Image 1 (cartoon, rainbow, N blue to C red):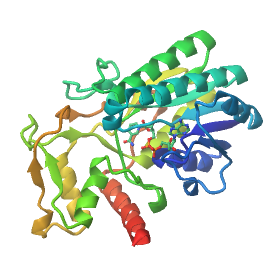
Image 2 (tube, rainbow, N blue to C red):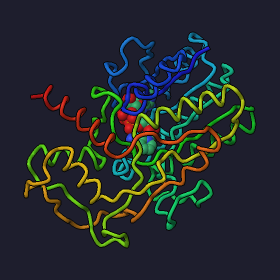
Image 3 (tube, rainbow, N blue to C red):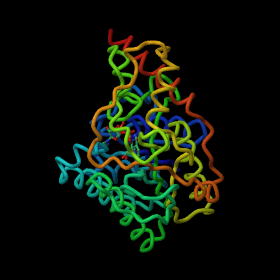
Image 4 (cartoon, rainbow, N blue to C red):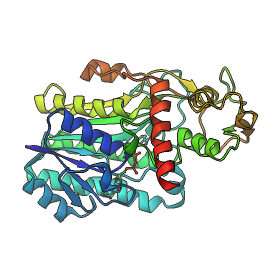
Length: 327
Ligand SMILES: NC(=O)c1ccc[n+]([C@@H]2O[C@H](COP(=O)([O-])OP(=O)(O)OC[C@H]3O[C@@H](n4cnc5c(N)ncnc54)[C@H](O)[C@@H]3O)[C@@H](O)[C@H]2O)c1
């Protein structure tokens, strides 16, 4: 009995692999290495390929006696999804369809799915609950919402047990070498500017929030990983059979607060060049997106353990190790 972890060579996936292994689970990773790196998961059984390759996936499921799947592999750039919607529907929607078909053919019983707060779009509420209406504002969010619906339909038809985890803003690193290498998110974006001794940018400070900047719910990637372990366990034990849950801290942090925290961690609070520069808003940025984390606490007994300082410090260690290695 083992778990197939798709996308296990990626940023979040590698943390999930480490947490599942630490919890004593047998795992096998399937990843096409389009953004992943096998060096993140040394010694872990690995299948090099795409979830779109249904025959390969079926073979891997049978060969490794897989009874549960954690499906993390996906494309995740909002901008790219706007430019290349069909690519996103192929990778995220058709990829999931084929993976579910392979799982149905081989008797997979449990399925954990990487969803996203992007399913909500721009919610006009203080705390986003799972009952908040889902109105994605880009193709990326659409593909995640369609994925949730597909999963629920298949579960109803086949008895598959599932947990769809809607991650909020993931940050931090469990170990420096597992850090996020993308630069689309706020924390690495600010690191890049600081590295280049340039002012971090704030996209709009006239939002209806206390300091005028956008508010998000940042959650440590190690907490995201432990949520997967809790979900996998509960599905295996049968205490959970159909769960859709936010994974966040339930605490809002503004962009300005995050930049202040980063300046403290990077020792740049007294540097005038590190004063944030306010530029125009980006299209479609909602003012506030903060999770209610009640559902996942009630269903899985999970709550986030790490705070903002841990996220920023560990992410900075990862960033520094990588830039030192590249120098
Ligand atoms: N990073 C975030 O803040 C965030 C927030 C919400 C949801 N998510 C979701 O979490 C998941 C992982 O995100 P990440 O930040 O670790 O990204 P990532 O790009 O680091 O990881 C994605 C992994 O999937 C692999 N992959 C992509 N397409 C594949 C395919 N067709 N077949 C096999 N492997 C494939 C990539 O090589 C990579 O290893 C994604 O599903 C993403 O939508 C991420």
